[in-house]
Image 1 (cartoon, rainbow, N blue to C red):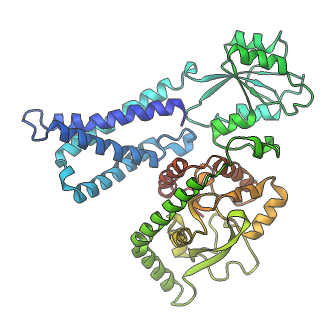
Image 2: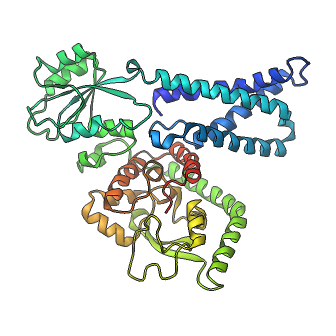
Image 3: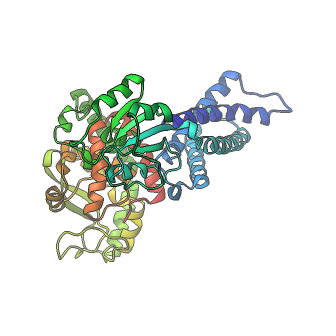
Length: 454
């Protein structure tokens, strides 16, 4: 989360907390309140926590959302509706926390107005260039062109490219940005343009690397980063085009302590056990629907060999959503509007009910709830020959959901696999319990918006 979105998050938590305060104040404006101050503080805390978690789950604090994906009013509406359902469950389970319906309605109105005002102010002032980090890009070829375009589609940009420096008189591939070819020194450019950070984006650094100039800039107080560091920080991905083999060993991350693995496995066991108990009615309904559609014949469950942690094979379990003859001609990618998908399969794939049996895979230890999606051995062998470092994603257990599924749409070819690998590697390098919880909360957004379903 960027500093701008962190500020928005804190501001909206405060607004939600005081919404219950103000809601109660409006309800009892002409009469005496029967709630104590301590009770209102507790109720406000519960209200703020539930609505905030719902907002997070609906992706309202994701900086990487594009305008096409945003749908602010829809997301807020669904978030508030989901929060209301959770609050009703809390009030039903713990009657001592219950508030009057009129207070809750007033609180919701105040909260909705507060959130909309916060968002209006945020998107008005967050666009101001003074709030963005000023970048000087060293390079003008393909790497530089890719960098300057990397944030164009996003709602909030965390940086502003001030200029690109043509260090080696290379052919200019950057368009729409200032290109500097004549200069006294890099430091003089930094001082003149008031640069906050320098990003090295040369296509070939073997010819000329301005060590002394960059060191002068660093001593002056300007940060200097390479493309890998920049993309990891700004895009939460590992740029495949700029990896060297030694980076995996010498970079921070890719370390897995025994305690972290123990906690992750304990959470998987507990959560899968609870979900198996909670989801069996839905699984029974899906099983009956598949059985009826198939004319009381054909398998209900579908088993398929996948590649797990450290290249070990296992059978993933899903509800069958395709015809029984779907792969008579061999392994195939699922396509959009795939005619092999059954009518029941179309529905259960759209809302991810076909993946419920994978909870058993998690309980057994073949998978985790969060991790890279497990691929079929045929595809892994194919990708390993053409995509560098592909098998590095198998350093952790595969998952039902993951960072790549959250950040990239469904992949159906080699290009998509290479793009998703960049997010998988980010997860493998940085995975933690906090990142897992963040991904699981945001998975709600994937299910509700039907992202990636085919």
